[in-house]
Image (cartoon, rainbow, N blue to C red; front, side, top):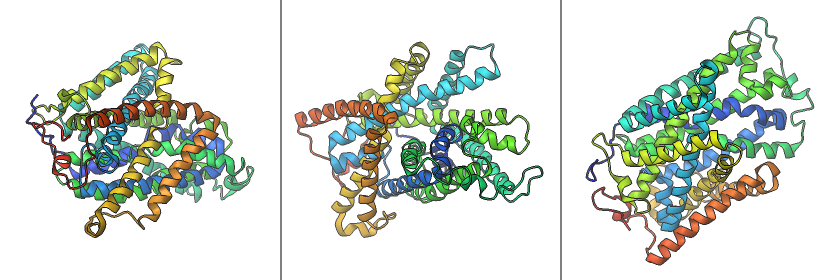
Amino acid sequence: MHADQQLSKSLKPRHLSMIAIAGVIGAGLFVGSGAAIQQAGPGILVAYLAAGLVVILVMRMLGEMAAANPETGSFSTYADKALGRWAGFSIGWLYAWFWIIVLGIEATAGAAIMHRWVPSVDQWVWALVLMVLLTLTNLGSVKSYGEFEFWFASIKVAAIVIFLLAGIAAILGLIPGVSAPGVANLLDQGGFMPNGPGAVLAGILVVVFSFFGAEIATIAAGESENPVDAVKKAVKSTVWRILIFYIGSIAIVVTLLPWNSASVAKSPYVAVIELYGIPGAGTIMDIVVLTSVLSCLNSGLYTASRMLFSLSQRGDAPKSWMKISKRGVPAAAVLASTVVGFITVGLNYVAPDTVFLFLVNTSGAIALFVWLVIASSQLILRRRMGAAAKDLDLKMWFFPYLTWIAIGSIVALIIGMVILESTRESLFLSLGLAAVVVAIGVFRYRKRGTPSARVGDADAERVTLGSGPAS
């Protein structure tokens, strides 16, 4: 590995397009949506729409900053410039921690599916195999990561498009043996909001985390041939992806089936496929979910490693992590992420209800912290630009009003996590972890007396691999 190498710029536009889609469509859509529907009934559509609007605003703000200055560290580097080095340090480490924890969760989920198919092989062995496979993929080259993600995402998109088309046909009465339900399932099972508006508000807290991951495209854009165009396309297409893939598919589920059906609670997408009379619905969905799990593992390892690499560039992580292999991959950062990832997988088998559960809960609210930092950074950096903002390639709509609405919405979601008993512990543990990391960051940079990096500082925006951190 060499310090004078540069990250490979081998991600193609098709890679970036699918990476952005993969970030939005996770296993949570296929598996976790059943619990949300049971909680709020058909009114869960309002929850998905509200959460989706917040994510759309956040992505637009992030897109504005990323198009103006594509960075591998994405929002962490923008927080450096807007809020101070302590902020970039803190949110970067919290974000990397989130994805490292995800590795343990997703590897276990994928291993469970593989164990059902091949029960003669222990589940922990499958978890190990999946982790090793995706580690080798990420160590190979950024192009191999992009190719894996392209095909993983393609399978997910194809599955959900077929689901949507078949669902529309069923609603219109075009599928033999399936009667058109009209609006009966939406209104006749206790009404559109059978458990009241409060359940819908609580549902927002359940579904909002399903959208986390859309920001990965802005991180990956730094390794594309044309990062500015890649960011613009990814951000602009976030709107229709959320509307079609999430809200469209959930609308089909609650239209075709009673929201309080036991089959919907267990697996809404399997229930709909079984309604069509297609044999092997469970196996079909297992394949789709396994694809989503592998996609999330692939992206989680990529994202964590790139954030650690960016932190290393800025002097906020061991310098050895910014060394790059001949293939243009920050191999040391990938391995660092993998080591901790393997530990979390092991803990999920050794102490699933104690240590691992505690670690998972410490990452529970990090998505909201990241979004709040993105919105705050955009507010500050945009105002700092003054008249120069008119030359931005991509702009936040109705600035600063929608920015403030987004900030208010995120703060309201955090307050909601305090009120809702099921999320309270996760929030407090996440806040505890954040407080420790922020305290380290503030102490570190107050002690150093390091000024905040500002927009236009060449050393903050273009850190060469051989010259050490900008600070």
